[in-house]
Length: 293
Image (cartoon, rainbow, N blue to C red; front, side):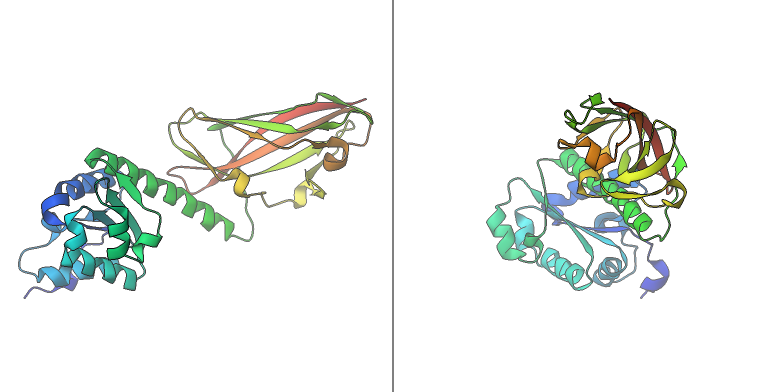
């Protein structure tokens, strides 16, 4: 018997499927994943001659990071599909369940109770499956880059050109008696790649030219500010030419933004982003003017 250890490739994903009803789905998905540099295993094509097929499959499951389950009606009754899925759960693999539209959801949950608790992809055909899984994996890759960035103690960014930001005030002039408004950010992706919005910070510039960082009442000197505000409001992925608008609730502009001197103030908005295919953090700048009378 040929040694599995010496033959096994490094696979990123194991595609589990019932042979008679989902093999074409699996092969098409594998070809699509190649374009993301995701090396996926399909048993019909990737088991070398002369090895124990079951041992080889289970070896790949244990070593791949993702387990893509393609569930068809006959897959509910497949002993191999059930056992491979159990192995993936034991090994705590990232599970991506993909349910063919004709599969009864309750039958699936009964057969795979643990997997049934997870969010799944429902597909109509092979192209639909490939589009949805590749989109999911691409988005997950960008999110993982964001997580890796957040684990750094100190985050710096470089000025980029792939994203535009056009901030503006809903109220252009304020006074002691007319100061309720908000700021709006309009973002646009100018690149051919997708962009993940990581976070933002804002600098206020007084009429005398003094600049500091503000986000509600957290104010510090510009040179000492090294982090980006990142919350659920900003977890957004933009595709090519996408536009997105962030619109805050109305607030007391004087109190929230600390505008307390007669004259023209500036809000300098910096949006930090991660560009697909790049591990660096970039930012883009926009300014909004408001006059305190």
